Image (cartoon, rainbow, N blue to C red; front, side):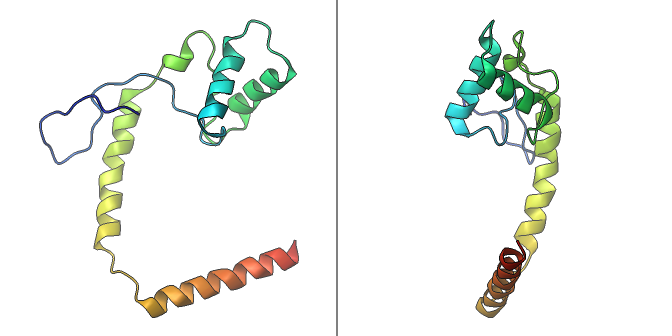
Length: 124
């Protein structure tokens, strides 16, 4: 993401412009995204590239059944981005208004989570 400027101050988060398909959430970072885009740019994908395409179209956490071919790598939905940003402010306000846990509450939470993790490990 590149911030290219600022608009007048408002109480809302909003995106004024942009380009590019949303990155696959679990693609493997920048290098994984580059490899996925390359898999769609090639005319004759090899086995690994076909598998990457299939994964993105069907199994990625934010999959896109249309893939990235034919310039779709540059498509994006500003309306969707702004709807998600609008939903973000109330969530941040709820978090900000929650009381901070005491040291003892945090310790209890960590201990409980640790016990649950150990039980899960023993079960597996």
